[in-house]
Image 1: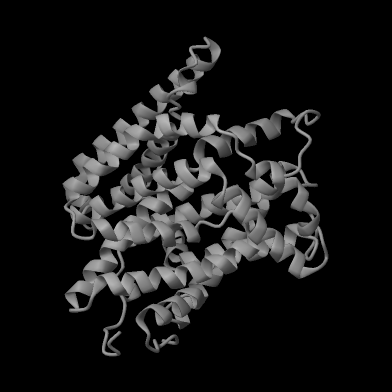
Image 2: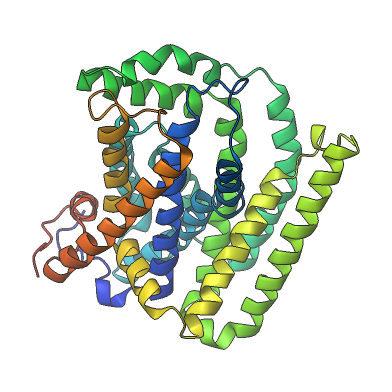
Amino acid sequence: MDNALNQPIQLNQRTVIVDVLRGWALFGVVLMNYFDFFTLDKDWTNFKPDIFTNILFYITSIIFAAKSWTLLSLLFGYGFAVLMNNIKEKGHNPYGFFAGRMFWLMVLALVNSALFFGDILKDYAFLGLLLLCFYRASAKTAFITSLILLLSIPALNSYISSLNNTGWKEIPKLFPLYKSHNPLDVLGFGLQATYLVQIISKPYLYTVHVVMFCCFLWGFSLYKINFFNQLETKKSWLKTAFWSSLITAILLTGFAILDGKLKWNVSRYYNIRYWIILSSMLFIATSICWLYISGKLKNAFASMAIMGKMTLTNYMTQNLIGLLVFSGFGLGIWNTKPLWFYLILAIVVYIIQIYISKWWLSKYNYGPVEWIWRQLSYRKRLQLKK
């Protein structure tokens, strides 16, 4: 690539609300990733949670479970469109640039998968290449395609769930590796578990990737209509999306409960679980946008925006901290603590990251991982220190 390629988008050119949403999503990610360690290797037949634990289960399930990675997927689609437009305006080949960028993201994903078997970077790197097919698409084309995918998800989910899925069944055999004091065993667990539960696992390989790509296209469409940069002038759209997603989430949840209690068995052929997740995610995202333009919670949003500016660094750091706390190479806590411990730990880690991110960005232009990734992508030296 031409060494004269201009600098990437600077911090002062970023859309603040997008960073706020990224920061919120990171909060949900660390909560649910640490939550996962509580659930691993549990004897669910004898596990009797108390009322407090049940309340925590319901809160995390309703507000955070699968809401964060779907929101990050939407924002990835938005970021893709921003980046491609930026590269095109500078007169360079956006296809070649983005393909190279996804290659280096896949390299980072390999590192992150060793740290945590729930890595999502590899999925973004792979599906990002598929998103190149929509680079020249209009908002209408991308949105209609997303609706087709959306309608297919319940049937796909039901069919894939009916197939034999061996990935998760093999995971318990690897647990001794994670409990080992040898760092190579621990990292080996991350890579092998990633392969089992995310690469060959049919529900993840097919259903989750279709959901992700649907969210990619939503984000792409939002860029095409300049949604986030014109929130103030799109209040009516925002309110419509807010109420529509809330009502949809409530109605779908009610239907799912009735389907289970009355044994209609609709979910056996058309499982609407991801419709509930996506409508809930959109309700949460529009709530944040509405509060943001109203001028409320300024300090909280400023903190989330700081986190969002270093999304990649903070995400990988959260996983590294998890490894050092839960694995045998670290403190070896594994799943031995009550649920509240994992959630409080996640909150503490997130708060500490806010302060570290604020300090770092006061002195440097990019987060450390973002800086490395951008230099590899742009094939040129970028100034780190301000």
